[in-house]
Image (cartoon, rainbow, N blue to C red; front, side, top):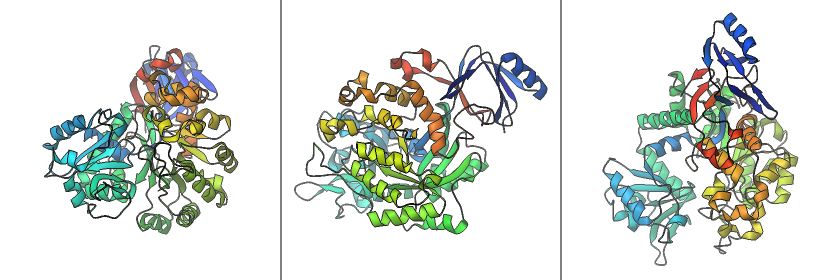
Amino acid sequence: MGKCLALINGKIYLSYEPLKTSESLVIAGGRVVFAGRKSSALTVSELLECDVIDLEGKIVLPGFVDAHVHLDGVGMHLNTIDLRGVRSIKELKDKVKKSADEVTSWVFGHGWDQELFVEGRWPTRWDLDEVVSGKPVLLTRICGHAAVLNTKAMEVAGLMSSNSPHVLRNEKGEAIGIVKEEALEVARKKFRESLTLEDHKKFLEDAIKYAASLGITTVGFVSVNDVTLKVLEELRSEGKLLVRVRVYLNPGEEKEVLRTLKKLGIRSGFGDDYLKIRGIKIFTDGSLGARTAWLTEPYSDAPDTRGSRLIDEEVLEKLAREVHEAGLQLAIHAIGDAAIDLVLRTYSNIRDLRKLRHRIEHASVVRPDQISKIRELGVSLVIQPHFIITDWWVLKRLGESRATWVYPFKTLINSGIMLGISTDSPVEPLNPWETVYAAVTRGEYEGVDLFKLTPHEKLSLTEVLYSYTQGSAYILGEENSIGTLEVGKFADFIIVDKDPYLVDEKTLREIRVLATYVGGVKTY
């Protein structure tokens, strides 16, 4: 519970839609109790014996609410090999070789993208064997839906002889070390088994500190397992949750996690102000980068595939109904338009669908008829604007004829669909200002082909900031307590070095967070 604070002599954005500002704010008991003139704020602060912070003209904004993030992955990324932006297989191998001596068990890295490699191909296990052969190596692609393993890792995970279509093989029938989707999950599981509880705790603590430093005050933490939930509760009890965490659990391999929640009667919103269980995360397809997103028509640059459906329709429908009836929110991953069709059919069969604000994650390739159905059902979408810049190759995958279906953010907003914004970090940078920049510019200054065909899908600054605060808060079911700095809400705010409304859109990504407060307590 934060002590009493009065903020004066600043420009304080209370909300974005409507756009409201104030020169002063008074906080008591972790919540905003007054917003208005400096003279009145000082009177209130004197009565409440508040500490006074002179902002000296600085800008205060509501804290960012990242609706879909993998905190464990962020923490792991902060403690492993960063392969984002690597331009060749040789550079990738050099980075792996340099880091291999520092670890005793698995060598782990994340962030490579074969589309950037000068060699024009995917890396293989033989590439990795040249630099590390005695320890298992697991390097995940930027999307998190594909990875390259060395021979040792393939053997440890039992994937060399697997007949899964997601273990890629060459013309001789040899596994080349590239694994996708459920085959990658097998490797990830083996890697996680090598981690101690202390490893998990360090990863989460580091990720939470990092999120606070970037001005994020609440996260929707997706794909959480039982071990991670246990560590989160430990951090909560130790007072180490510097941001509010809203949990979306995996249902469990045999639905054991879901069964336990149902047995205990745990519903959406169970927990306290810092740690709450919100719902269950389900996958229906993969990613565009790995060509595993499920499309209605084949990929333009791989006409032999439409991607992968990762769950049978009957299984999804039964699972979704079970989650809904348990009073838990559904967060269903669907990137391709065929996957979105599947989710919309499933949601159409759920009564009182709007009650729990069930979500679709990503919705990257959305047809106009699907937009109408999403609006009609009242389904919320959680989008990742930075995908536009990272997926600069997307038209190569989908062709120009589908360009207007790709990340149609403005159309979605104009259609009255509620959007929440996220980074899907570590898939995209956790820094919110990178995301704001991407949504407002749509890759214009990076020469992204998608921008040239869909400039009308750029979002205004207000639309982005609203979706990144109030929109995400709504999707998390907490619009009455977070997302704005209106009286009665939690005092979750950030102090920044520039007013986003007074800078050129090109420099939005350069805005820096000077301080972060959650419930009136300084966390950064």
